[in-house]
Image 1: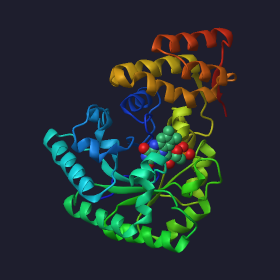
Image 2: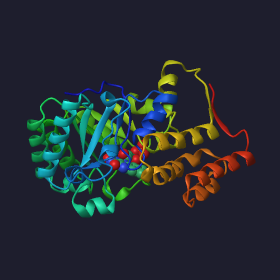
Image 3: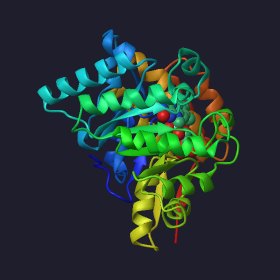
Length: 332
Ligand SMILES: Cc1cc2nc3c(=O)[nH]c(=O)nc-3n(C[C@H](O)[C@H](O)[C@H](O)COP(=O)(O)O)c2cc1C
């Protein structure tokens, strides 16, 4: 059952970035995201009760708006982990908005392990896995996130999407890049548009949506059911708020105090994540956030080399002492 209404704007799954601290930060300061994807959770780690699993699977502050993404190298683990998780969350009264299967990740270690995009090399196994998962969990929203695959084979891609729909998926999230394209090359939105027309379940489009104008284009020109935003939501966590407000008020303006935003984000990481995660998650965030700053490369470099949170806070304060008044204004 699809719980995502048409026109939704969604936070994409991103390792070490889309955790509870980021969701709390967005919700408290610039609410506007309709749904949140967690970073991918490993079925193997979940089944082994690995440390920190409760943080990867934390769906607060709004479980009903949060979808857990799973990554697995094999079908038995996937079925076992997802059903176990579902049963526990029903018992705890904290059922999330749905489960998503990662068929998209092309990071070398994930590919080597046989997870992520490698499922697109074995479509029959992927389809069987989803059919089994659907029969084990008839009531929950089930989606899968895909890239375009390994090579241009449009017919096979459409057939794969149709078969996934028939296996019981409620929607497909498409990041329209081929495996080898990483993030740099052209995003094939034209292909995405054609797939939307060919299959019966909704397509949620993802990739390079960085402004109100691009979000608008995704809905108006490409007729997408919903859109998903990744890196821009880390660079500018107010992007959902901005898009939502601009779509109802063309005169909408806002003013972002970058120093306050930067320091506040750190306090959310400290409050909501385990100490072992603090430094890595803060560094990962500022890798993108520093793009907002005129001399962001200096601050980014200093933060990436910092050994403590206190020194990161000091680098941020001294940056804004040297470049006071740096802020972002969105005007009519
Ligand atoms: C640091 C990082 C981590 C990511 N982790 C995941 C992940 O766990 N699962 C997934 O399906 N995609 C992952 N992605 C891909 C994003 O979800 C998204 O598809 C991609 O960034 C393109 O969208 P964007 O242009 O809006 O960033 C990751 C991307 C980045 C940059």
